[in-house]
Length: 293
Image (tube, rainbow, N blue to C red; front, side, top):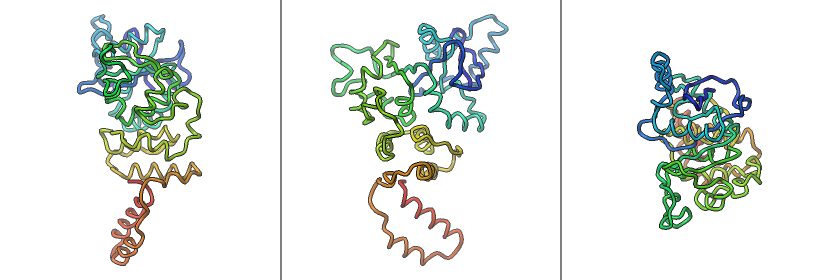
């Protein structure tokens, strides 16, 4: 994995997220904006500053600057941010990072949650009020932020001005009300592996991802699953995820997702199969019927 140095925002490679020297690392959970700096952007800044003598952190985007400064104030020399700590031009590195993402957040000493659409709280807009900015934050609707909420050992929430809103334990009841995630899990009194598959799936039911395949990939860590990352496969990614869940868990709740399959309609269609290609289509339809779409 790659980590940012908090003093200069330069990228450094590390072999293992669970054994980062100098006091571990901080990690950021956030919703991507329109102009995030990438791995290549950060490397280019470092190259430029090597000749000018400038500090690349001073030239980084506002989010990277603020995150590195916050991590440094909390005593961390290293930090991880998904926008710039993964070389997404490398399919191998991207696949490895997606499969290890839950581990990254689990290994971090602290996770800072940056809510760009939540201003500093006020008497007119307390966090828990109906319709509050905190309740409406896009962070609660994204697929990837589900694992970012449950994986870390310690979460701190920050407003758009980078002011502290509270930690996960303090906000557990409110987070459960918003997300449906079990409060016992959020206060670290429950083991994720003991929670039924269907209940974990329900947490993600109304969350969205930009890429269709990420609806499955963002849940790999929630179910302790690893599998090849194949962008372009569409809905089959979610089918593959369920197949892996069945292999790993003796939990029939994975099938408790909707109405029963109309087997008579499939038998009728089976009589119309006239080619190997049609047979493959039929098998795919049957598989998607057994599992959730």
